[in-house]
Image (cartoon, rainbow, N blue to C red; front, side, top):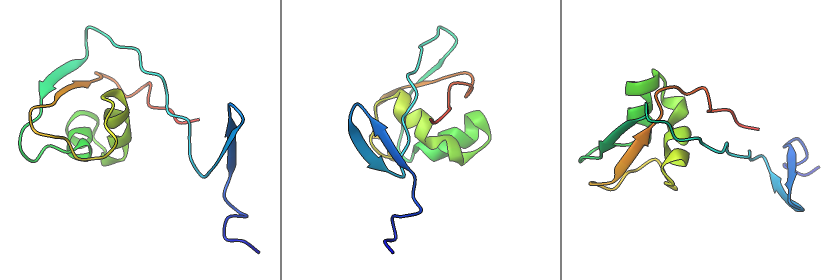
Amino acid sequence: MSRYDSISKIEDKKIQRLGSATLPEFQESNSDNLLISTEGDRCDLLAVEFYGSPDLWWFIATVNGLSSNNIPVGTQLRIPLSAAQAVLE
C-alpha cells in the first residue's frame, strides 16, 4: 500500500496533482486595503490582523502573486476587505 493511496487526486487541464487545491481567481475591488510591507511582515500575520485567522495566509499570498508566507520589504500588497473569495476547490 502506497502512502499516497488515501490522498485525493485532482486533475486539471490533463495534469494530475496529489493533495493540492485549485486556487481561486481574485477580483480586485476599490475597497481592498493597499499597503507597503515593512520589516517582519508575513502573510500569516497579516491574515490574523485583517481576517482574525492565520489560516488564510495563502489567500493574501495568492492575491499578491507571492510564492511563500514571507514578504520582501517594500512590496506593495493588496488585502481584500473580505475573505469571501478565499475558497479552495
